[in-house]
Length: 547
Image (cartoon, rainbow, N blue to C red):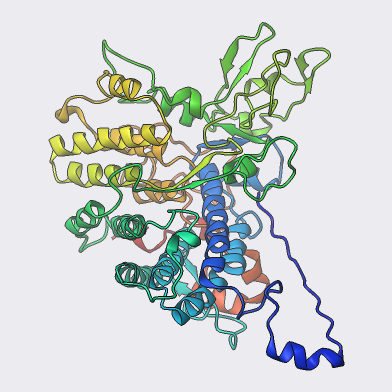
């Protein structure tokens, strides 16, 4: 997982230099006044991406997209057992607060000096995006007092309150991004490493985030589906209008990991694909569309790693069956012996996520083809048009508008494939095959949400959907493959029974980060007296509570 690095700069000032330093700022030494808005924005976006995508990696373990090699007590292994503790979910919290959030106000202050309204608009979106995302996974966090220098132990605000705040921030950002900048303001393109200076993309992102968060309240009284559809219609409508982070493959001899894809870093060599994820990609679940013109999803070999046998023939990884019991002792990690052309364990059938060797020669055995998301120079699909199409499909389906819902469902699949650069002919062939629902009357919410599950691989939003639609359970919370949405999503065999004692217990929120437990426990318990209980992890967040 991503780690934090602290750089301490020591400045020794001689008395004879006092007058000099009093009237000059050293542009090579960081302080609150030197960096301009265009200098501040790139690291803010990069650190946000780390916090956001690292949240997505952790939720991918909870959401059973990812498994891991057996390591009793290991952070990721605990996550696959649905045990988020103060340690294994601490990095997103630290990365957001320490590396990103505290730099938002200084960016806006610098931008105000030159009337760089577009930078202010982007800063507000970044603030909304970070707090809105983390509030939904932690359930509560400091918001109003988080950057007050006079407050050592900031108050925790509930996620429902934070959502109100971030929705208002998005409205403000949209206005700022439509303003004419001051005559000396830098062009947004100078500092924008995400959307390359496109104010239109940022405005569409703001509307997309509004659609996402408003849709979280779908089970609450007063939910207004039309407001979600209106926001979605103003969000990204194409690949080009989506917010996608392009990471950099610096080559096998470059040791720096600063620019590589977050999922390459985070999944490392211990992550594995689950059977559930593989089953969804191959239409192997209850009620999956099928027929005489079936076609394999062209994303399978991009999302699922393969390994070559002794004869050089590639074989796809086996998916880890989380409910089978294998997770009680495995799968185990393995090594490859090049001299013997063999692996140390039969669990090598569970193939690593990273391409191995990194730069193979003709003589090398391919130990893993890697995956599209775990390439070193991969892309982070932070917010795309695909998500909005699936939001529309869900709402239209619930409004019994099956024709329109089917169109949106197919559009969501197409959009995700286009982001993966799959050839248009293959996309058309798949969407016209019986592996995709063709008749409006046969479309189900499961079909829509399982395709969204694939399109939102490693996104923290995936876990919001799973919680919001209650996994694969009936009204009582019991696993039910007939009534449930996410067919085949079962409790893991190694689920931690101290934290999930009942069959109706499912993961609903992250634990409180260790920093707050250690230094701010009074405010934690004031906001949530149950925060120290094991069952806190299955306590629903505000939009997930039964009404």
